[in-house]
Length: 520
Image (cartoon, rainbow, N blue to C red; front, side, top):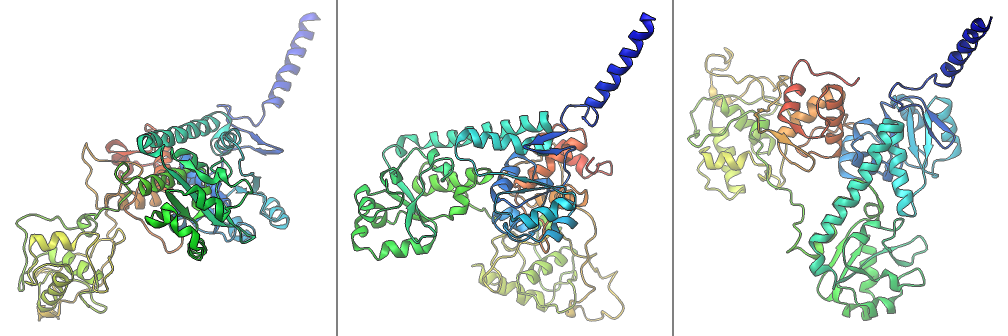
């Protein structure tokens, strides 16, 4: 009898434990509880209405989960490649519901009716507050990480990201410490009450300003706004401002014209929205601030001219040269580039492999516009300039293509019967052949901040495999930003590769193979 009773008790205990741990993931990551909200599994897609949360998500490497953002997310890469769902306060709820997102990050600006509508559709709405101190900011990183990656792994990733951010900012600050300590600066903006104000550099008011090593004269404005007399007496060496309205107001004050920053022209525009974000933007904003003040110590991010030859499908060689009368498959790519830059008008026709009068005249016009001898010959020097991203078009603008390649070139053997006169230079319209113009060697590797034409192919392949998405009308670029880094991290995780966020040779070979796996 005692044995029977023990077995019965054991069965009850097992059933109780089963109920207690029902729904828990084997790795202990889910469910995650945020306030009174429980999240039972890792969300595949999320919406970030808060531009600050979106900034943090990108810095943490979870950008591939962003299915939508609000109009307040003006960060370049997000605004170009992630779908907008409308305003932060009154978003398009139908668009959110149809996006497939299961979690929406919002702040207290989202109205109650929209919140209810989203919850009724089964979408979890997580409301976050803007951090006012460093502990709250760290906690925000932990919370976002837990929601996206789990109670254990995600929370740890959030902590790591926060500590990494603080380290990056501190290291950059130390580079200019020798010159920054003796300099003063301020950041000015006009508030809703039409008062001139200065950001203090606290966590809630332009935190990045505390990582410059300079003295922020905002501490002198005890009244809460930038008093003109105190601004003059403080005499800052550098002034950063939100809009031209700020400078117009300063310009109307005769007494402020003697301020060092004004006299020496050390005034720089920086949108306040960028200054207040607490994720990826902090790194780029700090770089802008430091390079503006100390250009001899910090190099400003400069967009270098990029080689676009592989994006067009042409391999440039030093002995390469084409002239009127030549027939070569590479002329297809030359004509396509001249067409893109506006020098060659083919109407509805596509490029051919024949170098005729039209090509010669177009090339002369290109050479003249780009400071080259107008020989009409496509020499190696001309071709190098033609396939550079900074090549000037007929309208004075540049043109960087999407990742497409021209159609099969028409050689003499493949020209249609009606093409009796090669000078017409007309064929079928170009089409995308499905191949990716990238050559992978053991040394091939791309990471955050890199710019290269191969990155367009990488982004398009990530889109094809559902790790990356673009906004309507957007396409791949040559820039390896947070979105690309996050997508590579997710790809590496799904394909059992080291999760570095770097597109190294090993990762790229798997990415462009038929064995590449879609998100798990």
